[in-house]
Image (cartoon, rainbow, N blue to C red; front, top):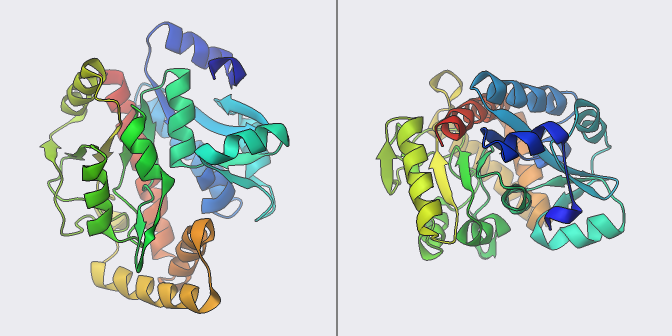
Length: 300
């Protein structure tokens, strides 16, 4: 697959020299946030990675070309696409997007796949997908990818809109270790403590990097989660968050929204119901996770 990837020259050189590189996804640009918030957030995440001493590599598809290290112009191009006109690209979608020469944003699963093929082992995102509340058959491809692709995903747990206990169980079944960076609690995206635990707590980036290195050397075959709580100043009260989630879920059910469409709908509706507070938490944790991922990549 590496022959079909376009890797930006400076990223290719950094990887060849063994320097720290962090992968960033692009569905936050194409599906997660409206313009210009999506553009500003993508650039802020890249800046956070650079400030931590690593090189950011935003992954996406432009005109059917799978790209590791989108340029500023390419990020802006994706950010300005009209809602609903860009493919949300997971593992199953690459062949379609490439053959049709489409623009596409890569999901957590899609970004993991490309990052691994490019030789990048650390990836920062907001929150992973998981098992949907009330629909245990609706399982995100992110969990399957974590079970088979050796990339460390730095995130704020799984999105709070999901069934978190079932998501944790699924990760255990797939052999995915969940590491808490400075926390013994599994974060719930908008708030820091879901009431569930992690498999192991580390104090800093150096400890996290040791575990990633051991996993790669032992060839466990899958990825891992390094979970980082949302910054305290932006955290939503759990009760307020859960109330908004329940209302948004009821609306989604009434409108028949399913599958890949439910997450963008839920995130947008929860932002409305919380008067933008969930959006502020989302932005804060995305940038913070990018910064932590950069520090881990440097140590690795």
